[in-house]
Image 1: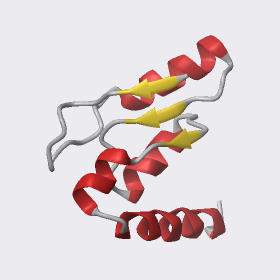
Image 2: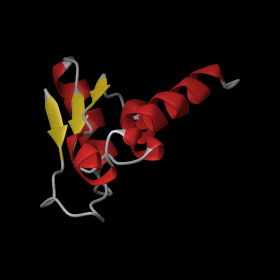
Image 3: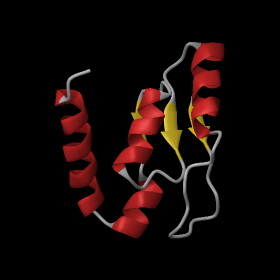
Length: 86
């Protein structure tokens, strides 16, 4: 199941305000894993999707506009979040 809010690819594409709501709805309604995609270009974007219940996060648009360095940035950011006390 994919929760997508893709807005024509442009550098300032951002997550829709209701992206998390869409993810939460799909997860609750189906019980299936949810892949969040569309406008994920920062660590905060990825974390927002995961916090909303996404199982995976797709970063194709982010790779196009931010390049392969985005992968390392996301990995470091997600690892830091995993190590942070809750």
